[in-house]
Length: 274
Image 1 (cartoon, rainbow, N blue to C red):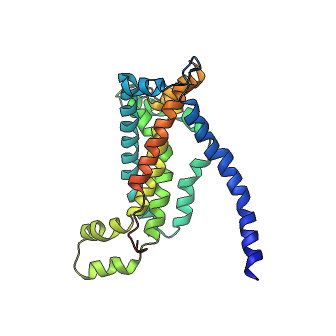
Image 2 (tube, rainbow, N blue to C red):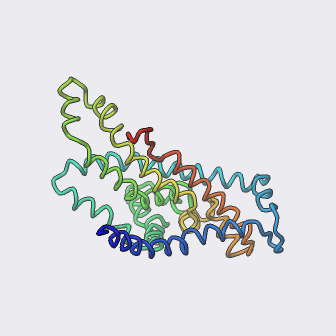
Image 3 (cartoon, rainbow, N blue to C red):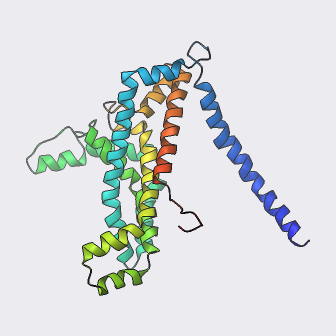
């Protein structure tokens, strides 16, 4: 009898979360899926999906989105894992981690305009290139600048889960590996990395999935030379007013994101063992 009021209170506290989930997660997804079946003329059909899967343009955009998301994720992983490992060895690691996370508090648009100033013809990098005698280079509106800026913005989201995974690692396992004669590389490849793989997978999810749908940076930093599905969605909703086609691309992106989450998700063995 005493346990019943607690269960009632627990159910009551979950109501705001359920309402929020229905209004801001489930309802928009259902609306996008529903809208994807309407053509620009208002007829309900499969025409948008037929157009998407039979159009070379949309397929190239899909491949571009996947490729750029892969490159951005790989670059952030290569930078973030050593950084997270080194941070865990420092004395004031929480302070250093805070300094890395601080840029995420700054608006994305402000960071993009800051990089426009850095990469422009009269920016800091070109001033340095003039000083050393190389001369100014076209740095802005290139694929390289887009990838570098996107990676810079996504790096904190890769570092944080890897940092936490390394922090939870049992030091005795590392010491045991070294006591048994393993080299530093063997210790890393056979002990440290496998035990922190869940953090790596979480980092890949938090970087790869948003990178699939980038559109602001493709315009401001890539100069529309980088065309992704995010750019196509923006065009259909704001320029051509073809909301059905934009929703169709959104559905494809959502399915791709679900697939990525399934592939990089944590596997649990039968019987409750991890």
